[in-house]
Length: 512
Ligand code: GAP
Image (cartoon, rainbow, N blue to C red):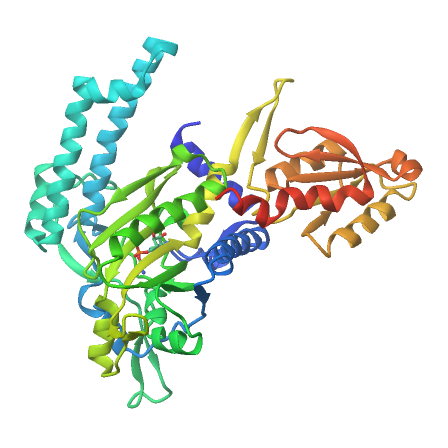
């Protein structure tokens, strides 16, 4: 399936099977805002729990908090978001459409990358089994010149953004003859910076109301609580504070489904360390976070690191873990060495000392911070899009199956009576009553059993359990595995152990 078709299928499947709906759909929706439906909310919760377990529960020196979305407005002055949290935007004078200037250039590069992929596919066809992709990419003249072009463009873009040289970003767009993707017009305005924070007001009367922002990241709620947590938790450096929660950004280019939203959820962890140790902790967290991703089995080849050319105002090193989404490799998680920027800024703006006294070294210092920050919605999209496959079966039919990692699947098992009579529904419901203490389970008696299997395949349910007439005789049921479609006869009392072995968080996290 072509990537574009695959992505369309992901979006329609997410709606059809109760994972993600457009927000306020009956009013024609709200751009880049989505609701998680009955299955989506479960999948999202399971991803969040999987992250929390790995980061908080499994680390003796990391604790979790849940800070408020509203924060004192000075927070955002101190953090630099009021002055510097902006994207370069450009308007097309003919179509009146607004774009992110850097995204226009990056999309141009993606088109060149598509040409490279085309060359690879052609060569693969020509050379067959003897084809060596790595060698081809390193030696083919056409590929090398495409790659050089991409590198030159991105380097210039990175430098211009870093130096705030917006005139050069516009010059680059003009030199590359980039046109408005909708209208084809090249009639562009100058590039301007656009602040991404949403403003709101606190208070009842117009005179006394205070201007607030909806937080654009959860991280600042951790920084302002650094000392509270350190003191009350008697935390010793190195230690981490984690939290998950909503963040809001008025994105200029909000598209690609739940990849870039205006209201989204982050899972962030700030790791407070001794100044001078940031390089080793940067490497440690890069490796640890990649292991977490790989434990879910989405395919090691689907991840890569992308080191930042342009560093955020607070960072001395930064990398993205990129994932191979249906629209190509894009940022899934950021790992940032944030220095002591945030704590020092909050110290300056609040007038409160935010230092750590090291009892062993007998000295006070402002800790450095290593941050890991992942978008929960992006992780959802990575898991969901990777799981959705169309499988050709031996009998020349296809099945749609959502091969979600069992630990994350919304429903762990579906229980069916083979027929709606002879006491089979009652027995199936008894199994449900017993299993639901431990797992999310689902009862279904509608349609032929083959159709029910297909529905659960498409829903991502790892196990189906069928009660038939033999069950009445010997207490055994048919257990069907989603991915292999293998069926075996098992005792009802063994069901819990078999299911737990596959869905247990420990079983998955142990792979880290
Ligand atoms: N505290 C650091 C921070 O917020 P970021 O790179 O701006 O860093 C971290 O965001 C992660 O949040 C990203 O890697 C991405 O997964 C997610 N994210 C950022 N903006 C998003 C958006 N508009 N929609 C969905 N997820 C987003």
